[in-house]
Length: 152
Image 1 (spheres, rainbow, N blue to C red):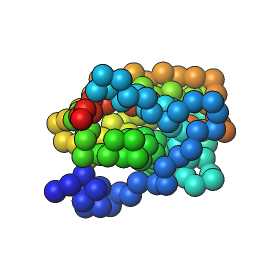
Image 2 (image 1 turned 90 degrees about the vertical axis):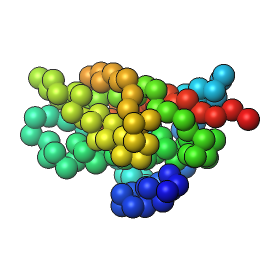
Image 3 (image 1 turned 180 degrees about the horizontal axis):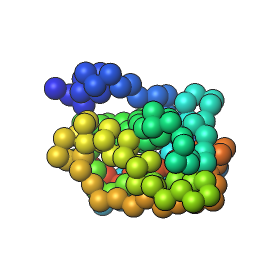
């Protein structure tokens, strides 16, 4: 089953490839490693907003992670094709947390689960989850992904 077929079987769809909102590129590839620029949890023109608190509905938290992961996969697909992703190496999540919130890793879990569901064992990755005082457009999560890719 191809990666796109797997996404479909999981009930997931890649969004339109996000365009940079600044002076940077969406992905840089060097020596077989793809570095995906941070992806905020944006659904179309709307943002899944932070700050996240202990009272934020779990579905919103999960959706933020899934949305970021799918945006990162869309960027990777355009850059190299998802079939050429050999392994997800590292994920870094920046979580816009409210006062006293400490469960930053739970916010990134939705993204990690998407990557594992899509790539299986090759989707398991090292990870950081960092609490921050704010994110672009007030998003709840921004995700960076580093992946090993096949080189021609």
